[in-house]
Image (cartoon, rainbow, N blue to C red):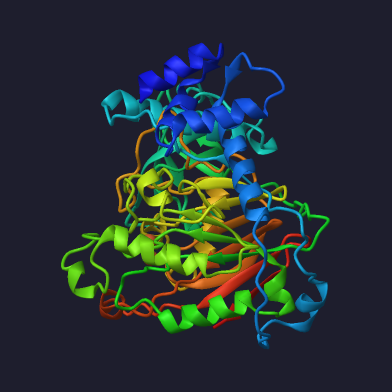
Length: 492
Ligand SMILES: [Fe+2]
Ligand SMILES: [Fe+2]
């Protein structure tokens, strides 16, 4: 197919960016896809990029969705949504959906897992986060560790945390590393810094002094964090986006009655339901096969394609006005290492054209509102490293990620990370909405102007969760108004 595609490209007198080639090759009909794009251009472009191709694919999907009528449905009550939220809503506008994938790994993976790949990956992580930290006033003029170590005055350094330990006197010692040197940093037990939780592999700035033994005594610790305030951009219309996660289709504990209820409500005449134009599903959309030992005993559908087929049927029964974005999670049929690419064509083709497939994590633009969507596997590592964090309080974990500007800072824990040339898990741009799933909890909150959503689950407590005393919060639907950023949760 590659050769046919390249022959077609040269016949048409254009060039294809390597990423665009890889992207097209996993599509059902690469040549038709490219031809469709070229037809939309007033003249043949000199170079076709990945962004061009993806944008044109979105337009095609949008057009297909727009063509389908919205079926009439019975009215149902929705008493759990407050009246204030209800009044702000309007019927979703008649314009087509506007969803763009601004960033994910799909079609761009280059790593082979070599030692060089890891070195390059960590160097990229360090450099990007160091640049963010350098913009902080407290760290202005920060020096390389090797140079700062010889200073007798106050020093400002930026490094990646290679190790964290607590001494028997309650001091905390960080081993901080940059590309020049590694240095021990003391967070004194009698300072507020001692209670600061630092996790391995995060990148922090330190202001302090060096003692005679080469130990840095920290006076303050600076994280990349978010700017202190940020306004929600707000769309002119009042379309809303609903969030789901962890549907786990195929599992014995999948809540099909609850699903029927939400499906019926979304298709009904309720004014809030009618204003929902988008549905973002943050991974674990099916239960998968062989994800954990003896999983087969927990399955009602023991064929992976069967599970996705069942999900596709459920989604096609939702109202046609919904544009649905599906991300994979750790139970899904893509590589487990993050960043995960979107579902392969063999799965995508089971779904209707109103479904958009994105990687995990991805940055989406919905009507210009920037949404960072991440399944949330790293919560497993954060919960075991940050005292006070729990599966029931995922929003605290999400705030920690935003402060570190990284979705999965801890390397070598439960979250497998693929050493791509660029670290896609860095939170480079500040999102307007940040959504995760994975922990089967639910919640909405704000952090420095970013709307936080943990998107519940459609699976009841599993035997594994029962054994570990984890209480899920299933069948809740967080809904965010794209005009205001206001968020509510509706229970089913
Ligand atoms: Fe899950
Ligand atoms: Fe998960």
